[in-house]
Length: 167
Image (cartoon, rainbow, N blue to C red; front, side, top):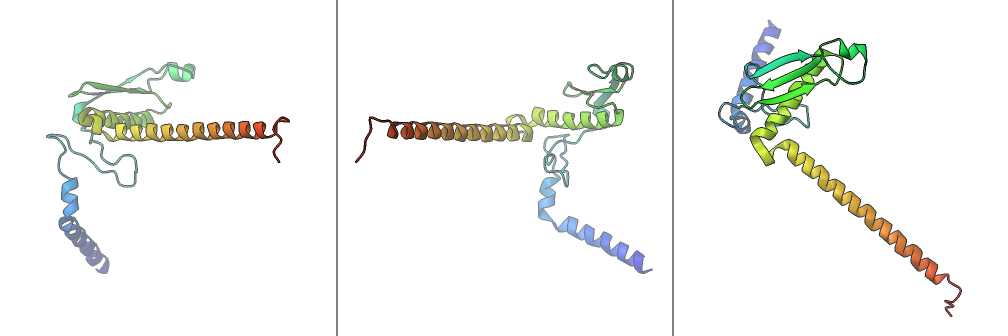
């Protein structure tokens, strides 16, 4: 009896929490007509990608190619996923497992749909640009350090020349 009371209490408190949170209503609004977004809890990188509707996907299993010999050439474990409304096609043959390839193909499809729907504001492209900027800054720092070392060595070499006698 006590456990059912606690269960009912937690459900009621969850409903109160859900209804009382003003920020959640903003998160649940559709981002474009017919396209809803899902916030993946616990995954840093997949925060705002569109949800895949299985009715809009066409899935095929074809034979893979590449290294692996008979294990990949004779089994149909390569997943080809097509999003019918946009025409985006994803082919995934990263592992020998069909289930893992299906999961990864859907992750890739979500990223591609995010890019297709949001364009330059897509999370994938924003993170890619940020990464490129960080790499450029790092490369610039490395080049500056190399230049400073070169100038320092030249200054030391000019000081230690036999013609330069300082009092």
